[in-house]
Length: 397
Image 1 (cartoon, rainbow, N blue to C red):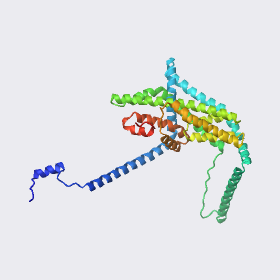
Image 2 (cartoon, rainbow, N blue to C red):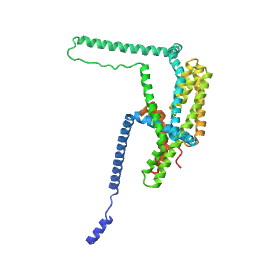
Image 3 (cartoon, rainbow, N blue to C red):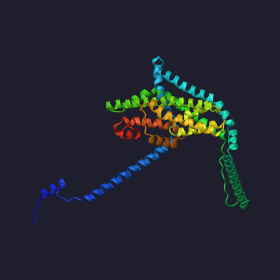
């Protein structure tokens, strides 16, 4: 009735895995649990890595910010340095000439804009009082805020006086209140200018060394790979990153300067004070995608309000600026970029939020070039092609 199976046949069945009843439900459940555990482990690692990276970026901001700015500036000046080398000017001297030219341009711009900026700061309180007098609701709000602050100060004074009455001899529970004295806006301005000078100096020094030793550094990086194909690929990636950065910065600079010039002319037609200053400010804001447009509309409205508070002017001037933004964003930018910087708008916005959260104002200007560098690197490495598809819009086939 029962078939006898020899020991050798049993060993065969065990080795091949046949002859035994399978349990699909238990196997499926086990696989699902294993999948959940692997995803949980991966998500935990990603969270830990992201947290540590964010803290490291914040801690090393004083070093990484001038490093990135120096690298981007060196990518912009690399082609002009090659032009100077064709004129039999040594590489070190060519790099020094370009760095000094950039420094002279920045200093000259600050000197030219110093007087208009100081004059505007002097008349700013008068403009605010004028706006308060012509807009009753704003004046009532300012008066209410001032009265609330005075009430809060009185409440704090009464609380301190009550504490002195309870413990006049100073025995018992002695509490020492340490107040941090904050300087005025002039002291804060001095601190900001000092920090800006330090960052600018380190940026220009790093830019010079990137220009002089950038090619040697690229060759040394490629020499770390054993295979010749990987060496060639690494050199191509470095050159592609440098060329894409230079093209992006040049194109964006030309478009933003032209846009700032149009805004300056528009403000001059509306009779605004210091239209060149406001035009340059709007041109700089346009380096920040999406958010810069909103700030530009606010700046144009403020510039017009400094001279004329008529409702017509306050509506027409921002509306004209919005029309220029629409034309520039939908026709000029796609034409001049020539489909070479197809970054996903959602990824751009997330990048702006992340880098501004990490590095503040500097992060707003670093966000898009850094994202462009990451996209170029991912596009040339086979294992990172999926990340490239996420970062770039229209790259999927």
